[in-house]
Length: 356
Image 1 (cartoon, rainbow, N blue to C red):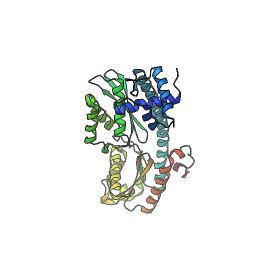
Image 2: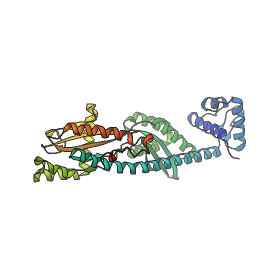
Image 3: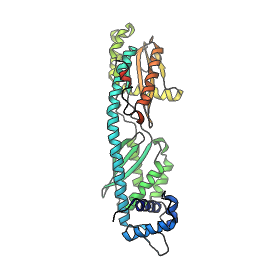
Image 4: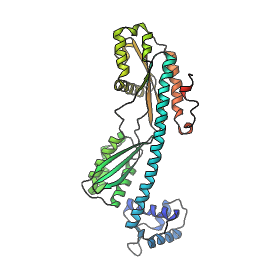
């Protein structure tokens, strides 16, 4: 017999409450935790139907109900299907968003190089520090799959090897424990005290908690391989103080080394956070590039959901700072809005089309 939505909601509430308390669940408890606005009598009738169908059990005559193996199986299958659908939607969204982001950012650095006559660079926003949810699923008897979704809809998968068997009920409890404790937190907020508390609650599966936490930390840490888009490197030859062979060679090498540029942009972002100003100006000897004749100006942009990127401009010490800062402020405003959900289909106002 197919479960209607009311029975699904009540069954889910019974299982989640039982996982939290370990005690049989009564109709009055369910009436407090569901949005059905049903009386205890109506819920009792639904629970009786669920019991007849084999999804819940009544361990004692006057006690509440507990999930049966059949109920757990239904809950697990529904949970996995629900998360699989959500993850598939997230992946599809991110593929489309990433493809669009790459096209827009490559155009942004070209426009910026043209408007300023300097060398420009931009680092895509790939940093997501806040955990959205974790889904643990069984792959084999001795292996789990941890699906980690970070804020900004960044999805990572991690296999977890088991040293002890784990039942479906225990797996559900671990899912509930991990998500209750860690959802919405950054890596910095997942501290040792919290981990120890979760291990104590996990009992004999404390080692699993430790491995899952390690997997989460590994999954949502910043990507070491930064992709930096650049444009306008040849503009440095416009300025005599940068065009001599030694200066030009060093600058070209620096602008071709994506790891060096990424590290420079990360460091300037930290400076901005410390100063409370997203736009940072480095003049001459202050420059993170080893050249006294160079100035560097950087700024952050925000795509929402905790995802931030960084823009940089490299030019002579006598650069037109007002023009550079004005261009950065304009691009910051455009990039802050262009990838928002409400603007997802509005490509006509992208920064790349204002220069044509």
